[in-house]
Image (cartoon, rainbow, N blue to C red; front, side, top):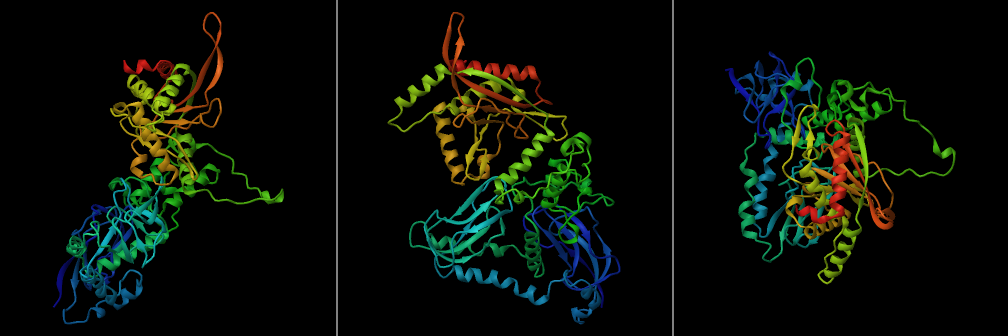
Length: 569
């Protein structure tokens, strides 16, 4: 006898309000067990909600643009007679969508690994090595696996290498032991708490086998329908193979207004955010993934085409990338005709930095204010302090003094310690003072951030910048150590140059460039005297800061550097 039953969203992890991007069935359709009903797309994966039983769709409870969570009702299905085999309910429909349905044998075998995990853990010393806190980033790709099954590892030894859009980092072993199982491979994406490997812990204080055995069954506590687990795993794998979904971008909530039924760009929230930051209209971007889904790479290709004049300008007029300029195509030249060449791909850091710099330069009206600071007395003080603290291993840098003086200037001119929102109408004034500095690494420039500079002394700032610079060179900076900056300093004094135009690091509104100091003759009113002069180059967002304010800022900063006692006032 037929019965009306509700088909609900199964366990989809820790995600809530995941948007419906496609409805796969209609009222009156006959569906097979495990056949897809709707497609959801989070910021990390595309997944289908399967029919938990065979039958006929009598009512659809959702439409494109709705946001669903675990337990939400998707459809009302009139099930077939319980005595009838499930396979006979809809053979035609199941045949029409072989990719949508998940075979029943696979679904039944899915719980087996979960059941086996506690048994394996009970054999003594088996523990999970998980991804530690990596800041606000999720879905960070694995670019290298550093160990193999059977390897002995020490505590804090690297297991895998992750690379976000800002940094490369290793996941360390939390304890010593032997690798029994690897849970990830190159290309997988992981977040905080993901299991990287199963390690048979060594007999030491770090091992703690008993608590691990007791906690091992925890992953099995979350119940899943037999169909949901393999379905979610399959869709995650397919999505990962298609393209990395905006690693390093902050998580965003679903915007229902962006998914009107007649205007539905097929893209995840992370890709939507990425497109908004670049001023790209997703309706004008052609998706390359399955079903026409737009990936981050599609947006990047569209931007490249726009810069080369090969794509229409994005909606939004002057806000669009390039300001609607009709640029000439990028020249295509076969350089090998003129001599020997070598093609060298850019590092990932340079690719990401390049896209950000192009956006910042195109969308921010830059102006650069140049000034000179007399640091003769400050340099003498720095040299003297380094001699006094030589035995303690403390080395003061000019950057530490620059940071301290910059914070005093930021307090006096708060518009420089602010951010403009995407609409260009609201300015957020910050009451904290986190200063970033450009660090040169073999793979390109990165910007570590020293937090609460106003609360630290010059010696402490010097020690922290030295530690962060070393981590940057070693590729061990975490995303959290490169986020939250209010103002940036790019110092080329150790290399050379007299002046340059640094590019503002959005969403900041100003950046200070520092060139190489040089001894110059300066008129003191009676005669020319040799003075050590430091060139300053302040680039700023002219929408927020006018030329008079920039001139006052650099003049005040130069005054502070000329007499650091003023910092105490």
